[in-house]
Image (cartoon, rainbow, N blue to C red; front, side, top):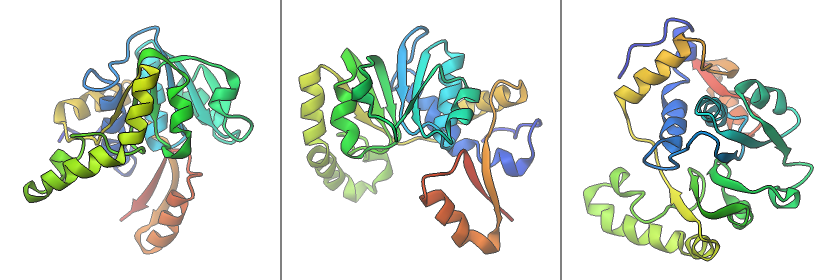
Amino acid sequence: VAAAPARVPLTDAAGLPLAGLTAQQALGPEHLDLQPGERLLITGAAGGVGLIATRLAHLRGAHVTVTASAAGEPYVREAGADAVIDYRARTVAEGGERFDKVFDLIGGDQMAELLGSIEPGGRLVTIAGPPSPGSLRETARPSRRPLAAVVSRVASAKVRRAAKKAGVAYEFFLMHPDGVGLAELVRLVDAGELAVTVDSRYPLADWEQAFERLESHHAKGKVLLEF
């Protein structure tokens, strides 16, 4: 836990912990270990996690390229993106860009293409691709951990082989609770260096419409339910 930010309403602050810690930990030393001057690609950056990750990467001094639609471009630019790839106009590979590291929020068939756009020795961290060995251990019940280990090895075998061939490290991860990290995110919000972008707000009675908006993948920032 951490004290809520004073700069934004509590309802908006509720959009910070999950998305913020996911972005913070992905870029941190446990995973991407993003350094100043490195070239980072964030896929699907106009959503809740992507916008926070873009801002945090910008604050770390990285050169940040993102994929987003034309409708999402103003949001990612405001968050600090240096370059925007309109995924509806072309693929990442078609532009020929090269990156040191990739934070993937999309998964799916683009994974092989992303691996081919990373410099040898680089890293790809995803929250949407197949789970890598060990990534499900902490979320599985103790009795299910051996099964989780087998599932993660099998599910990610193809992409791990492709990553090894490209000389790239591949990792799936899930956020873990972290009060110290959350307090740092709150500090950035209160300092005006980080924003919680709210796409839309719904009363609790309209939860079905809220989930439809979320699952449309067109949300720009967080979808909030207000109690």
